[in-house]
Length: 336
Figure 1 (cartoon, one colour):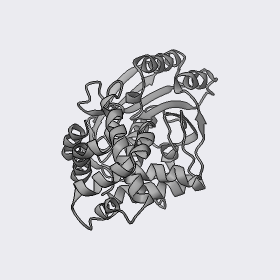
Figure 2 (cartoon, helix red, strand yellow; figure 1 turned 30 degrees about the vertical axis):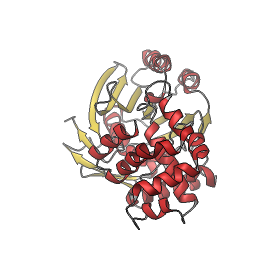
Figure 3 (cartoon, one colour; figure 1 turned 90 degrees about the horizontal axis):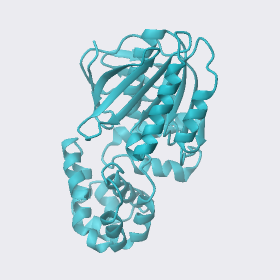
């Protein structure tokens, strides 16, 4: 399984992380508990992000002890990948198993570029302030998306003084020049991370690519921004939480937006169906003074590509806005 994901990562332009996974596959016999966990994983290991959990555990261990051969490898001080990976997984089998049992907490800030572009489409349609509802918020970094600055195909939006820049490689025309105004933003997560907690921030940082300083720097700046402007996140099961949020009366003159990025793959089919049903029920109550929008940045069911989708009510019209890099590094915009 690790070797299969390594192939995917090489195609995504991440050869160093791919090499770590390949070495992990070859050295897995040295960590019997980790090997058993991977072999016996129930369900779809790729959808569960199992390889990313393994890579995150390696990164966390390297960050904890900078004197190890693995930490030196991550600093590109040597190239003996198998020796470094083999030694660390042999010595930390229990830690890796414990780490991998929890889902990834990537909270990828670059995905905010796609979500912001979708919000610009909605703003061009309704021209109303937004109340945002995010599913699977992790540490809530993307609830702060209005505090980031963006270059979206040459369309520059957001506060110019923001320390967080999101500038994906853009293909196609820019998104419409809709003005995004956020009146409120709230999210939910089964295990939300507190950005004031050092261990939580370390976990987030461990899921950043080990050889991507730009991504790591953007994450660090987004965490600092969230510490200054704490996002509002509830702890709970989103399949129960979302219907309650959508049942709350929506004031006239506000557009309610449900959004999520790389969340649905971690839900069981029944949970996904419950989310879709709750949103569609709320859509039947929408009117031009109380519109509802739903945008998701998710893999297709066959995991062939990541799509940015948008549905708006009243009307319930769905648009495939863009095809995207899984971590938001590029966006192929499809709307004119």
